[in-house]
Image (cartoon, rainbow, N blue to C red; front, side, top):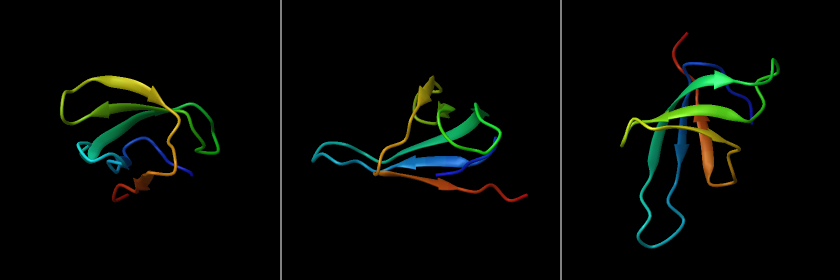
Length: 63
């Protein structure tokens, strides 16, 4: 998985009560775009460092 600042991270809910989460990638630790990413989540405006799992995908921002 590769990402850049400004891309979106979407994490699909994997449990019955889980919901899809959308987050803005605000920091990428590696120059090659690999994880971890600092993400600001839209649902609660919280930032967290994340290593995305198989239920996540990156949507590139329009450049």
